[in-house]
Length: 422
Length: 144
Image (tube, rainbow over all chains, first blue to last red; front, side, top):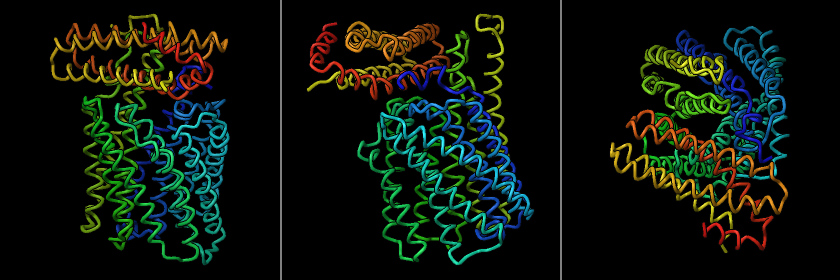
């Protein structure tokens, strides 16, 4: 197991994670278009089909897309869990996730019933392939770091999210919405957002914050216990949904753990040993701050509509962090694969993507998040927000492509041939 | 009791500290200080590699019979880091700050993932396999 991980023969080819990273912003652009052409009252109403379609364009097309891509790289590196046929695995998961997201969202956005069947079929293929295989290899890992443990809970939460999701989809297909429908929907959201998304982010942060930024570790006890506590709380809260119990106590408990995570993360980043400026820090700090704000909104039920909560949590917290991570992963993998193959004049990590262009993207991204929030009070701002979001995703895509182009231009040359660099 | 794991992990942290000092000096354009810090960091890093390669790895290989396993992998990564260290020296001579930070970031990432593998697996394996020899191995490393 020890030789696995960041050794070239075990790490998946760069095309594996890169295809996921390049697909996500395309769904981002589509999502921006949906916001632009939809009436605000409908898309901001969480029960409308339009809103369900938009939410899944994000959770499937962007969130799952980037997380699946990153996981295929991280499982071998951070956990020592190696995917045996990385290309085949990526082909199945990526193709079916893309087709599934398109089918699923077509149903909710355009009301084409046939598309739901196709979408659900492909999503089931993608998620089941990913989770069953991940659970299998993660549970075989002998040396259990806190990241491996968090990843296991992430994978279990993902599987639970999928199973509840399939049940909800089947009731849509048969047009048979039962009395417990919204309890299932709430449990689906809970496991999807706090289990699937937050647990993975947490597990990865435990290793990536100290590694990328030479910052302090999260306290050991927190690393060991927090993912388990969250996982148990998700179960309790889900049961409460079905019986309509008052869940303020457990909601508070969950919030305390999550706030602790965000605060520890921000503190660790602020006290990092490596003081050199790094633009991805903006993404991390913005993301964790948005996380704190969204937790406050969630716990206090401060706003009647969940529109602002959704925007702050999804775009402010999740998407910011995912983008910051992708900006670290793409240059590192490009550099790592090229140097390991013996290329000499490889660009440094900072030369794969122009830092200035990442900053432009960041400004567009932040401006779009604030405009989305503002649109709640001044509805016409939704047009500004949608356009900024589209622009931000185009910039994200261009930045990623430019790095991957640099990589492939060098990879096409002979490692010993220096003429390409003159 | 001191273990291989605690002793060498502590040395990793000390190297990280020196590395951060080096980067700080370059960030402040203090090239003279940077040269001093690079010399210090370079010698500390090579000393750490020596303690592992000349003492601990050999003891580990003798005991386990694994010469092509984890220690071979770690030696390869040490070589990779030495090459990057040379690039840093060139950048410092040229006072090429931008390039320096690109290269230093690469070294930092390699170092961190390398340390993680050692701290989380190899050192624990070494402590377990070497048992009663641990103390002597640490003494021999300190003597270098």
